[in-house]
Length: 484
Image 1: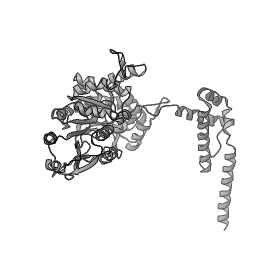
Image 2: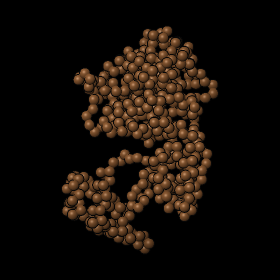
Image 3: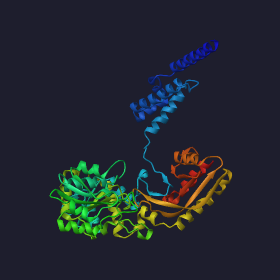
Image 4: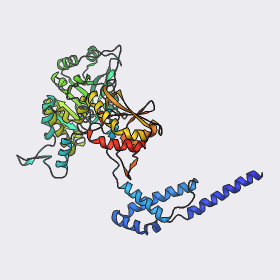
């Protein structure tokens, strides 16, 4: 009984103490009268400072209520926190990172990095007026896709081409323009999900086209398409299985068979190529279909992404017969899905690189084409730089064989040989090291660029294939801070 009474008294005392601390918290108006916050409010606006103050005070109240605070902060300390909160609000959340994962087209990290010339073309056109929709020679209104249409046609070999904001939009526009109210024949083995729960059947349903599945998951033959054709058929659809592979007892009609069926029946053949490979990656060991091969095979319409294997900005590209592209451009959705001048500038610069056959101009292709020996040389250099740090920080740095992946939903189960940096520490686990690199351990009071790496067998793993040479100094600084 006495014990219960003592516990109750202690709880009451703690509650009373919390109430005392809560009453000591200064009101927002009092805080805004402090010189530091008054000056801040005059500079960035009172509303922003008030919001930051309320957030800071709510955190303090929560800490006190949960018994996590032994005292109430002084007004000057609260003001400092508010200043810090405002600085965080005014700092862009989108920032650069160092990708040491070895995943070249990392969807979470923005997929293909743009070429320097593409960035420069954006800079030149973003900060001033442009001839986006103006024909300078004629002195009349022009079309915005003239800047990329002829380049795309030349690079792909198509009669015409147009651009929308991503490949899901390209598929949606093609189906809505060419098959609304009719049927689209597609193999069950090609009803893919392209990421974030965007599925071909769902896109088709929203477009107003009716899905007509043929074959089975693992086997579809040309006869399945032939038997499914009826008076309501508007399109034959072939979807590149870019993000998965079906192995074993499988069958799929050759592209030439589908082209022949399309030409015999007069029903257009549309191929969604997804990854958008414009350069042959056969020498690197990848059997990825190339866009111009489909055009040469006389596919009527193809669509693909701009920011995957093509190495450009996010865009959905449609190329094919002139008559079909004209129908797409006339559809009301085309304006809703069109791209802006920044995408056009980046896309134009990227396509010019293909026209010059300058594949190393594009960072994604340069990374794909880099040999394991080249990457190993860079890894040895960094390992050498880290030797003094590793010795003092009780860490080991080793170089080992490994594999890089292209990523971005392309080339499934295919890898690039590489050389990896393996780092282990007596002070930190591999998971702790990964977190220290990622969250930005401060160096001389300043945060370093976040570094994204992998963890395997309690070792930190870094693949320099996806680290730019210009980032190596920053990477060494980040590793130094993380190991100490």
